[in-house]
Amino acid sequence: MHELSLAQGLVKQLLQLATEHHADRVVKATVRIGPLAGVVVDSFCFGFDAVKSMSSVTRETILELDCPPAVYRCPACGWEGEVCRPANVLCPGCGIQGRTFPVGDDDLILQQVELEGDDETLSGSEQKEGK
Image 1: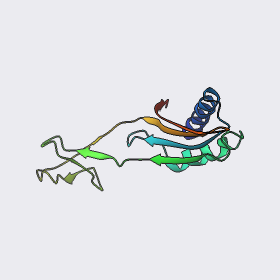
Image 2 (image 1 turned 90 degrees about the vertical axis):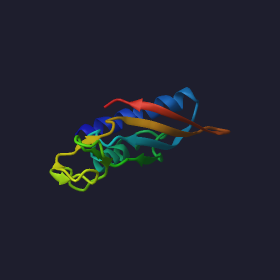
Image 3 (image 1 turned 120 degrees about the horizontal axis):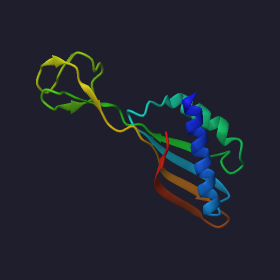
Image 4 (image 1 turned 90 degrees about the horizontal axis):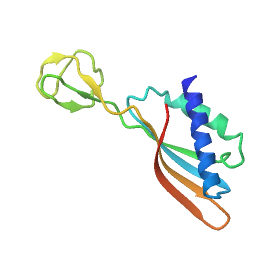
C-alpha cells in the first residue's frame, strides 16, 4: 500500500518538526494532495490514523486535506476546466470532440503544521513530502 508509506513519512516529518520546535504534540497538519498525485485519499487517511497513534506526540493530530479537483485542457483550443468524463467529450471551449488532458501537479505537500508546547502554540507552512 503506497499510501501507508506516505502516511509513515508524514508522521516521521511531523515528529521531526515537533522535536526541532520543542513541542509536546502536533495539533493539526494540513496536507495538499495534487490532483495528479495518484494517492487514494481514504487509504492515506486510514494509514495516517493507524501510524499517528504510535506516538503520544501525534496521537491526537487532526489531518486536514486540501485536494483540488483535476482540471483538463483541450489540445485544440487550450480551454481548461473540470469535466465529468475527460475522454472523448465535446470541448466546452470550441465544441470539438476529442480527448482532453489532465493539468495539475502531482505533489504531496505538508502546507501547515500546528504544534503545541508548554507555553505556546507554534505554526509553520510549506514543506514538500516525498512520494
